[in-house]
Image (cartoon, rainbow, N blue to C red):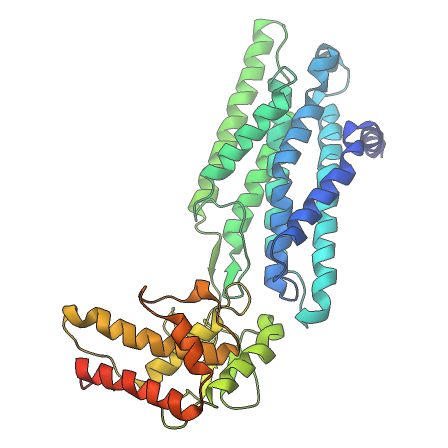
Amino acid sequence: MHMMRVIWLETRRSPLRWWLPLFVVLNLAILFGRSTSWIGVWPQASAAAQLGGYALTAMAGAAGSWCAGREHRSGTNGMLSASWRSRWQADFAQFSSTVLYVGVPYLIGAGAAAIVSAGEAGPGFLWPGYLLLGAGTLLLSTAAGHLAGKYLVGKFAPTVAIAVLILVFGMFGSRRLELFVLSGMPQEEVLAPALTARIILALAVAAAAVLLPGRLSGGASWNRLRRLSKVTITVAAVAGCIVVAGAAGPLRATRPAPAVPLCNAQKPRVCMWPDHRKYLPEIAAMAGRLTKLPSGLFKVPDTFYERGVQPNAAPSSGFLLINEVFSVPDALAGDVMENTFRACDFPDERADDYYEQNFSMKQWLAVHAYGAKFPNYIQGGPEDIDMAEIYRVTRQPDAQQAAWVRARVAALKAIDPGCA
C-alpha cells in the first residue's frame, strides 16, 4: 500500500500531467487521420489501435528520459543513492507513473477503435495479440527512455532518446524482429511464441530501467565494481532477450482457412473471411454484374473466393482486399479470364500482342464489375492499354461490346489457336 501511495504521489506531481491531453490527441489523430477502412473489421481495427500506440513510442521515450533525468537536473542523484530505501523503489514509482501517462492514451485509442467498429464488424472483438504487441512496444520505448534519462546528463537527453529509438525500431523492422505492424489482414495471425518473446524483451528492459543503479557521481572502487557487475549482467540479459526474440521467428503467419466462410446466397457466390462481412454486399454486387455481360462471351465461375478462404488452394489464388474493395474488380476479372481461356503457348516476340489483348479484355471485365469508372491506379498491364477506349466500349450497346470482345478473342487465336 505504501508503494501505491508513492506511485500516486509521483503521478500527481509528474510534469507529464500537462502533456497527457497531447498524447491522447496524437494517438487519436494517428488512428483516424489515416485511412479509416479499418473501421468494421476487427483484425484491422486491432492493428490500427496498435499502430496508434506505436506512434506514441518516440513521445514515450522522450517522456521517460525527461522524468528519469530530473535527478541530474535537480542534483538529487546523490541523495537517492544514500537513501535508507532501496534506489529501485524510487525508480519504480517514477517509471510506473510514466507508463501510466503513456498507457492511458493507448487504452483510449483502443477503446475508440472498438466503439466505432462494433456496429459494422459483427461478432468478435479486438484481437488481443495486436493490442499486446502495441503495449509491449510502448513499454519497451518508455523503459529505453528511462534508461537514457538515468545515464545521459543534460537537457538534450530526451532528443537523444528519440533518435536512438527511431534507429532501434528501424533495425527491428525485419520479419523476425518487427515490433509493429501497419495493417491486420484476416489472412494472418499473430504467433504466440514470437509475441511472448517480444513482451519478455520489453519486460527485461523495463526491469533494467528500474533495477540498474543511476549514473555514478563518486564512491569507493568496490562500490563501482559492484555497480559495473550489475550493469554487465543486465546488458547481457537484455541482449539474450533480443536473441530469443529473433529466434522465435516471424511475428505473423498464415491463418488457417475459416471453418465456415461467409458466403452470399445468390449466384455467383462470393465466399469471404467472416471478418470482412461489411464488404460482402458490395463484392456480391460486383460478381452479379459479371453475369449480366453479353451471353456466350465468358464463363463466370460459380464461386469467387477471397484469398485464404479456400482450403488447399494456391497461396496467391482468390481476391485480396487492398484499399477497401478497389482491388477486387481486377481480381474477379482475372478469375473470369482464367475460367474462360486456356493457357497460351506463343513465341516471345508475340508476348506484347498477347498481353495487350488479354489485359484489354480483363480491364473491360473489371470496369463492368466495378459498376463505374475503374480507378486508374489499378490498371496494370502494358502501357499501351487505352483505358479511355475501354470506358467508351462499356457504354455501348451489348452487340457492339460483344463484337469488340470477339475481335480480341480472334487476335488471341491468331497468336495461338489453343488460347481460346
